[in-house]
Length: 128
Image (cartoon, rainbow, N blue to C red; front, side, top):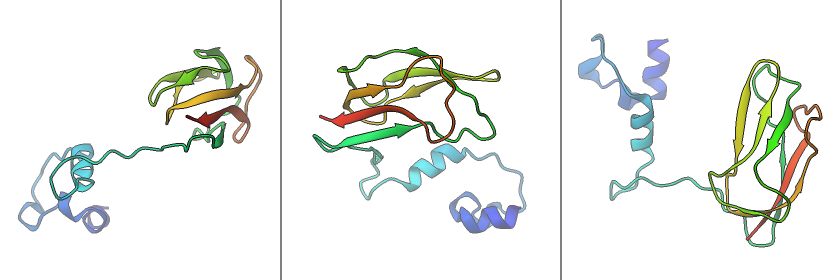
């Protein structure tokens, strides 16, 4: 396993540390690999072009299924910002918040308290 990690992430295991017990912060190291030449972090964003419509489907959440929307925190016509919580999804095992990945206007939301499976339409957005 260590050899696989060394191959995939050579910066995590420099030759002088191989064989020594070390604690590595994977998140900060991977983030530093995404920085540009000026050593400033680059932000990965999903910009939805103005007027373009994006359908957001129920994602695959490992081996979880039978999700339902318990609460909508926005309504049709609202403009949501990147990172804003749109709805709360829940099943018998977990509850999770679904956040917006971009700034957009809500065009459609599915009904509350219906069972959703992977690929079912949650909501539709239009870029602003």
